[in-house]
Structures are given as structure tokens and as C-alpha cells.
Length: 234
Ligand SMILES: *Cc1c(COP(=O)(O)O)cnc(C)c1O
Image (tube, rainbow, N blue to C red; front, side):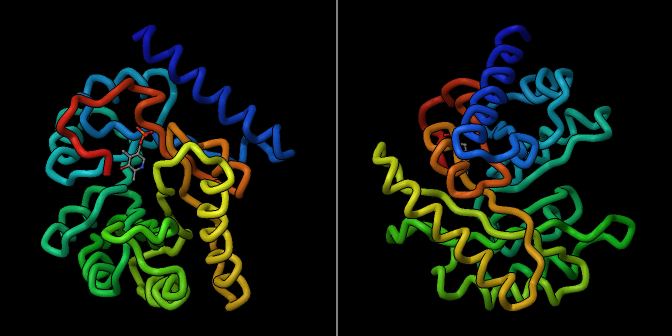
């Protein structure tokens, strides 16, 4: 418990320092705790400290954790891993947010499967900002069109964009890639679509993401420690 408390306080202080360094309001940046590969009890420990938003990559793993934590009524679950279209019904029923919508088919299926008793599913369009082959996400030039399709679906609420920068220690390179996500949001606003979320920045690059306008940073290692080897980072 104390281990998590220090890590959680340190992460929040790091976000606040990154915000101040570029004259941004720290309150405008949400912390998403990425609990993939960590047990339900780790989620419970952070929840006890006040953390509410948790990110998971793998649907099966997430559903098991949700069941184990069913007594916690106010956890906000975010899917941040690739979404196969055969998993959309479970995702639409159990998650509050999906950050990884990268094609219209998945968006349509999520909207159709979102239970009427729940509010619309919060959605970010994933953009391949690093331009690395094999990485998930639409190319930046297709981001607006997919965002418009998401916005038109009745049971989805378009929130913005999500991106993963290349694993590099080069801060300028990280920033150039995160800037692409801000440009997608600007193109949306110019087209009359409201977006309020830039989901970008992880344990290794949150400062660059905050400098480029991140409104939600996704931290795993910084909060929970290293994941067991063999578990892919994304
Ligand atoms: C695993 C993961 C994270 C968290 O990464 P850390 O480096 O552990 O902070 C964030 N975003 C996505 C999409 C991930 O897959």
C-alpha cells in the first residue's frame, strides 16, 4: 500500500511539474493508471487513495479484474489496447472509454452494442503518430474522417485522439510526434467538431506529451513498477 501511495503522489507531482514547466494548469491533465499485467489488488490500492480512472489493454484480463472489483462502484475503466471486432459487445458493456478506435467498423459495432442504460461510450480515435510500420492507429490524414464517423454514431461520444510516440529518448522527436495529435484536434475543431481530449504520454515521455497539450497521460510503470517480462508493452 505505502509503495503505491508514494508512486501515486510522485506521479501526480511529476504531472504538475510538467504542467508548470509549460505554464499549463495541472488540473487540466488527468492521470490514467494503466493496470495491465498488475493484479486487481493493485487497482484496489490506488482506488483507496482516490484514483478512479484505470487503463487496460487486454479485454479478457480487464473483465476478470472488473469482476474481482465489482464491489467498487465508481471505477472508470478505459480500454487502451487494440480492439478486435469480436470483442466489441463486451467492451461496449463494461468500459467507460475506448482510446483505440481505428476503423469505422469497430466504431459502428461499439455504438450498436452500447447498452441503452449506460451513457454514450467515450471514444478517442487512435492515430499512428510515430509513422512506424505495424503500429496501430489511422494515419494522421485519415483522423478527421474517422472522427466525423464516430461523432455521427448515436451511442458514442467523440472525445479526441490517442497516440503512442516511438520509444526514443530524443525529447524533440517525442514532441514532434505528439504535436501531430494536437494538429488532428485542431483540424477537428476547424471542421466544427468538439474535442477535449489528447490521450498521450506514458511513463517515459509524459513531459513531452504535456508540453504538446496532453489532457490525459497513461502511466503504468511509474505507478505500479515494471511489468513481468513477456507481457508486451502495447
Ligand atoms: C502499457 C501502456 C501504457 C503505459 O506504459 P508505461 O510505460 O508503463 O507507463 C500506456 N499506454 C498504452 C497504450 C499502453 O499499452
